[in-house]
Amino acid sequence: MLQNFVEGLGYILSVQSIIFMNIGLFIGIVFGVIPGLSANVGIVLLLPFTFALSPVNAILMLLGIYCGGTYGGSISAILIGTPGTNAAAATLLDGYPLAQQGKAKKALMMALVASTIGGIISALILLFASPSISKFTLNFGPPEYFALGIFGLSVIGSVSGKNLFKGLMAGCFGVLISMVGLDTMSGVTRFTFDNVRLMTGLGLLPVLLGLFAVEVVLTRVYQLLNTKEKDNVIEFEGDDTLSFAEVKKCMPSILKSTVIGTIIGAIPGIGTGVASFISYNEAKRNSKEPEKFGKGAIEGVAAPEAGNNAVTGASLIPLLTLGIPGSAVAATLLGALMMHGLIPGPNLFRSQGPIVYAIMIGFVIINIFMYIQGKFLSKVFAKVTEVPQPILLTILIVTCFSGAFSLKNTVFYIYILIAFGIISYFLRKIGIPAVPIVLGFILGPIVEFNLRRALVMSEGSYLIFVTRPICLAFLVLTVIFIISLRKQVKTN
Image (cartoon, rainbow, N blue to C red; front, side, top):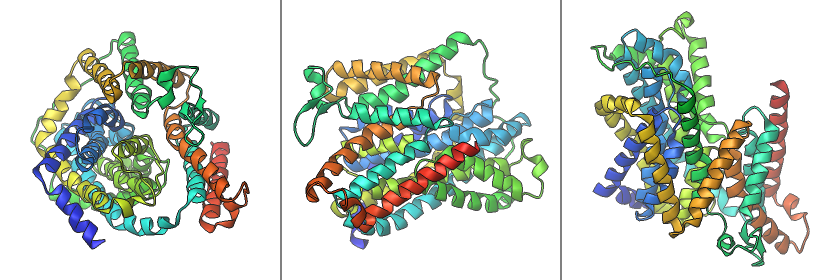
């Protein structure tokens, strides 16, 4: 562990790594600030540009987008009353009233301080907890990978929104399209319809770009064509500063929200939005002046921002150690890691130890740089809310097309991107989410391949899945998870 730590530190103590961290942070905050976009869209769009980078620099830049996007949503929530991301929805409740009272600068600084503290603590937990978990996962074989994949697919229920059935339909669709191409074990073509271009599969990048980025562009275009309302932008001026006494007053809420966010982040499928609202409710419940919440309470900004940023580091624990993407961002990062030859799961810490430690140490440093950028560039980020949407959307769609084409220099991937963008747009219209499709698309081949390998090991006996303790434990957890989810659905 110490050797990997030292070697990993050597990877990131370079000018290049620091530059790419900050580039990622800047882009992430910009994407977080703009309503309708998100860190996930930013990661998907920038993914093609990371192919020329080393794995460490590429992943650190994408993680910078993740952290920056999670924090950036608070800027538009406070200044224009529109959360840039779902994670900032709870921040709006008190952040925007504070801005209307002439305390925009104070609210923004409180959001930045709370986000930084939550992010750093979460990143440290990732750094010190992940290696211990990875040692346990070294005992995994094909049966355990299969059970783990099934458990990962059960997460679909948690990211399906209010309609579980629609989420399961989306997950099944994701598994179905993942089978397009050559069968990895027999070499037989499947669902190619005699099209040679489909023999290599649909491609993760064009699918991701279509499902998320193109869908966002289509949605924003529709909104622009059907509304004439303009956001009420509050000027980021004034002498209101955040005092140390106010930070000290909010510290109990920040620390408690960090714990809440870390726990929620480590559980696949829950996400930053849930963490921020639970943190907000806890801060209000424990406040001596709960009547001020919703009217401009500074704790109402600190709690949700600490909670949603604490999710970022903790969400990488199941991703790196088990290969389970518990959210849209984690699913995209899983694809990014795989594209750079880093396969998340039990063997990652053993085969790529120094690189993994470089990523985890870099995650701590990213949160420190986030505070520096937020402190000195807040006015710049606030101006992004004034960029004309037609110009912004044009840049996004051109970037999408360029990214899809650059993957294999073929126009066919642009067709795939357009197709999935249109599919995602209409699926969203009828309440079917895109995240389960991504989970099914990524985890489907893992489940299928390891199921067949496990059955080869056992000579066709399914008893192998219940006679191996780890495998049985994951299957039991899956059943418990599904039962608890079903009860929640009935309650709602």
